[in-house]
Length: 102
Image (cartoon, rainbow, N blue to C red):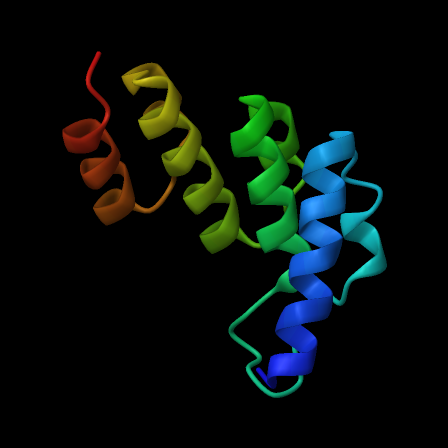
């Protein structure tokens, strides 16, 4: 992703986190045209979800890869293995159970 895009996306994410408002994330693209495997919007959702410990935000993510990543990140941050049960990808789920402490 060109640097200009990263700066813009980073700015939106920081504002979304500061305001605990995923509506700001919705102003970003679902997919980056330069790097289609990236999703600025879903990455922003994850950032807000992790900062607020809110797994309900993870549930709003349409792409399962990003949804699993969201659950993983919150489980590790909260040290809560119970959150790992929401993960579909078995490899990510295993990583979650190993990484989350409780």
